[in-house]
Length: 136
Image (cartoon, rainbow, N blue to C red; front, side, top):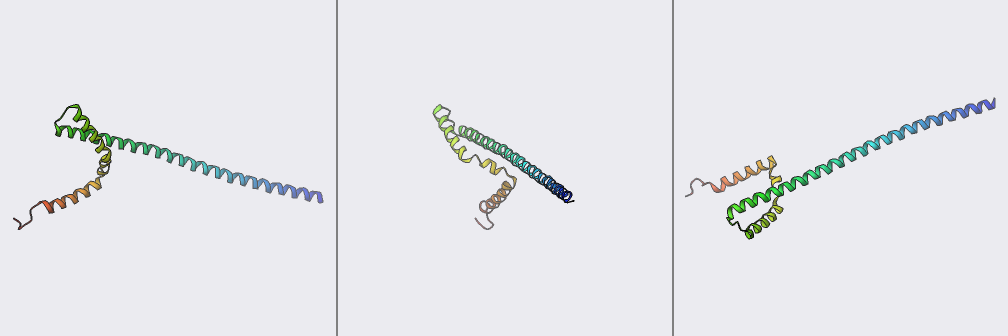
């Protein structure tokens, strides 16, 4: 009798331990799954940031080159000097100015910014440039 009770208690304890092991395994599997999802999410975000940064650098370089070409063409048209010395000097100056101002093209391309700027400029110019009634 006592041996039977002891065997039943041992079997009950092993069942409890097996249930606890299954429960702990389920918790660990859930934690691993969540961690892998979070890791995948962070990796995807990091890859997206890399591509976005590369695109921004590409756009900035394109703005720089575009600004330099436009400035040089305008300078060559207005200067009328086409010898090597003046063309080299003009190219150096245009590259310097383009380096300092290439981001203006990107800033001015936003529609809301240009609309607000246009309204402010028009109101300022209308107030200061147009003749006022009663003035000579």
